[in-house]
Length: 67
Image (cartoon, rainbow, N blue to C red; front, side, top):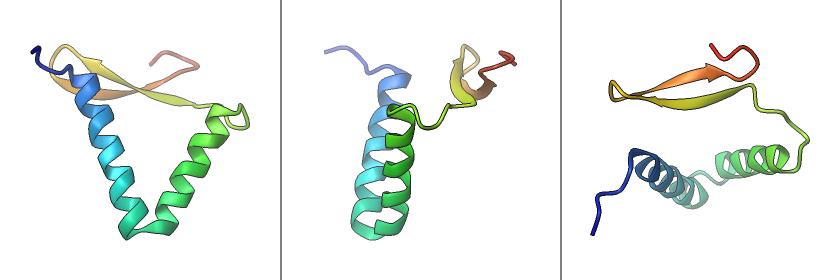
């Protein structure tokens, strides 16, 4: 069995956090899922994305400028 990638670990952590919010903080969960749906349906354009650096950390990247 291969070691999960950092991206897969981040996705799993996010999914676990959503489950926590759904159970313990339903208002936060509703806001996060509404935001996800707005992005998925094109109602909101993402301005930033996370990028994993070889140095071992995530960095925030502005999509329009690439910086």
